[in-house]
Image (cartoon, rainbow, N blue to C red; front, side, top):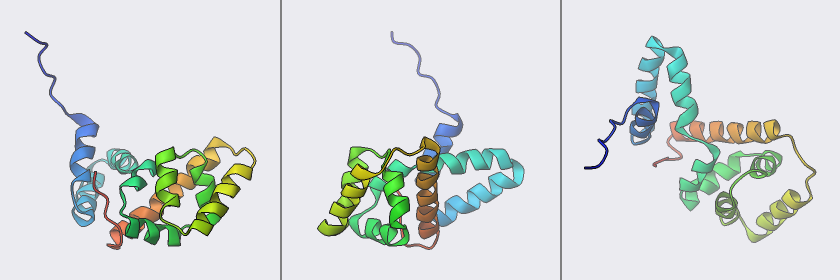
Length: 140
């Protein structure tokens, strides 16, 4: 006999369920949670998406997002991005833009991790705004 299965629960399960919902329904649920427990709502919101989730976007949605991001912020955010996310971003811009961005990444001096994480968080906020406007759709 194998070990008994542990029931799944807690914040990870709530995150999984929230990620399956459309943006409007998710916002309503988070609002209701915030009315009862603001700290929990902030925890859930913070864990719903991270920078690497941008790989899920279709090419059209990625291009829509890239139009909203200042180049300097994108360069900074990509400093600690996975190779997969970098490839996704580069494949959704012109060859010339991708070449310039690669050069900037290669020649940029070392940056503070907190600055990189801040740039990534700001881009995620832009993506969330676009999702709320119906211009992006995140599905895990």
